[in-house]
Length: 193
Image (cartoon, rainbow, N blue to C red; front, side):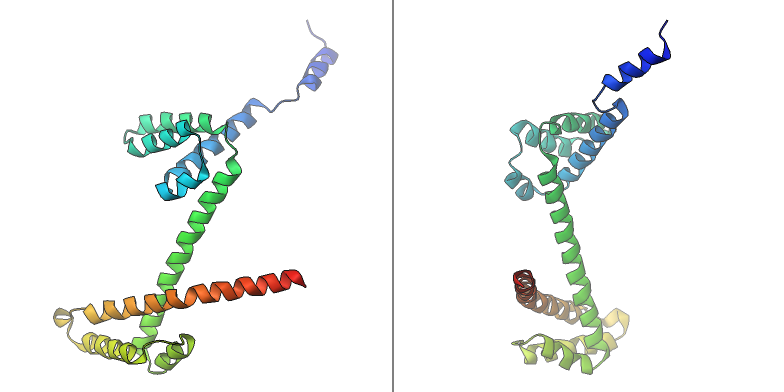
């Protein structure tokens, strides 16, 4: 029989993580592997993953059976123990952020289109914010979209409505890089001070 003192000395000698902690870490790696599967191949290539892990991710994308996918994810989790997960987490986060920014830009373009169709003052606001814009083309698109919106629903073509959206989206993208560069320059100046 063991005494209480013998049990505590054995517990004090153990320095490794608990079995539960190891399982949590393994589950986290499997989740990260599942998120890596959502990345396009062009985003995975620069990560310089071991070939066996890259192949396992490609194979997992092809598996449709639930149990097969579960076992493949366990295998990916096992392979990921040999890789530093931080750059992989960063790549997934960057991809999600880029997707969110794209979605936000589309919503912004949609709001501009609704404003341009609803109020005349929005046209001047848009022209002021987007220097160098083809004003004549914008006015023509707005006029055509308004005319199309005034028709009965079964007579609408919707082409002018879509063309206006594409024009706005293109202008937003043309202006966006300049805005991002200006914000980066402002941040650099703040860091210098």
